[in-house]
Image (cartoon, rainbow, N blue to C red; front, side, top):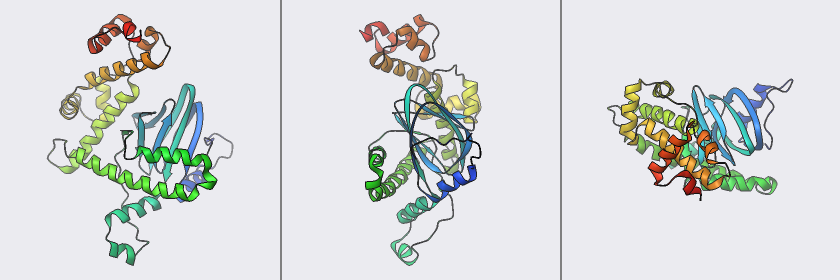
Length: 299
């Protein structure tokens, strides 16, 4: 699909639209600087965006997807999304049917005898991937970029695209194995508690990553993570070796540094963009981290 669907179009059949995603693996690649969608059902998908940010809202959580990484959403998740940018943002989404997810999962987890005797075996339990922002890496991202390139000549690359789709999904399962190892680092007695706490801490981390320019407080983050404020503070610091406030400052200063390098905005505009109203406080903070003022850094 090369265009965003128009959910508001008269007579638009949302059930027929969703049915397509249940039956076919669909790639959406479209461009916009101003577009939004109300909450809707989604299949298992990988969300990417290039040349700007696309924002996804899942329950009370916000995810900003951009050139830095990708977002994984499970089948059956309801979410809304929007793009509001000064430049055209490329929205690039890979959607997977339950069937292809099952094929890859069974091939990776079942014995050869089972797969030979019952090639159409269907594993009924829904696969539960960890929904969070993932940084671009050497495992998954090369295949994402390969598909992004191949669809430019879709007609001549259909089989190669199909093969790459399977390879990408295999890497996603490997990525989830890596996440399972990260989950084991969470200090909790039960494995189920470890996974749940891992997910909630990343809800908070991803919210800071996505909404750093806003006025964020600990109570709000506690609500995002469905944890009480002190427990969140303690566990966040225990796992990430930094407090939520320190993580917010680090994110803001890092973005400011990138903008000083890559944009023509003046220092006061950058200060405002990263969530500060007082340029003097911002300059002191920047100098504290990088031992140089924003003005001198740009020069």
